[in-house]
Length: 292
Ligand code: EPU
Image (tube, rainbow, N blue to C red; front, top):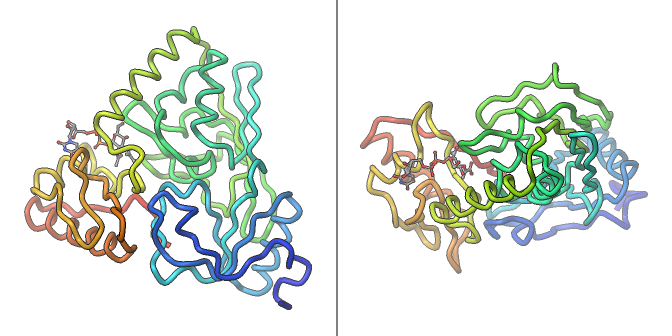
């Protein structure tokens, strides 16, 4: 196809996105590519800019719900192993944007570097985690981030230093198209102690969240000082079901997709939860997940 001349070997048409997401729901990407080098990525980004074609970067797919009708334009996902290097030296961890957050956390803990272990059990990639400033009660990724290299929507590669980065609750100024790499400055601690703490945090999360189910983590952001999960629970919505989508019994801010679920079941359940919480408790919940 003319649109992709020079990229025919990496661009596919009508690629199902469901297998690339934790929800395992939703339709295809109009075009899909897995670039293996910076040049390939840059070429694709520039082509999309020239052709005014929408482009999105998919990370680990753990915080996204793809609509049943699919996604127009190009969806890019780094090929396996590309931009996924992890290096530890002198109290710092440098990781590619496509590195799995879990791998980065265990590399840091193994080397006796503390901070990121509070993020244990959060799935996804470093890029996705930085984009939404992933975190838990023990802290977020932004507080440890010293530097990030990003690609803009016009294909330019830029380095952002700490003083240019702003992180807030599930928000980050890193809103460029793609995060290529990032550096974290951590604190030295005994690896054994650190491992124990990480394991304890993992046990607490496993007991309170339906990890390993088809879901996208918490659906809504916590309203200031409150737990969205607690509010949904208080509104009596645990176990509420639409089609194959269900408000989880263990943690009410998780919607789990059961076999046969469609993306629109989850979307309708999201609206139901939002309106019931507004009616019964008087609080408007805001989405945390990305809907494509
Ligand atoms: N609670 C309920 N019912 C529920 C869920 C929670 O009563 O269904 C109560 C708990 O018993 C607890 C309080 O609410 O007393 C807080 O619950 P929890 O510790 O699970 O924390 P959360 O505020 O609901 C946040 C993050 C989670 C993160 C946990 C643990 C958000 C939206 N959620 O949840 O992040 O894992 O803290 O640190 O910020 C995510 O972002 O995807 C996510 C799962």
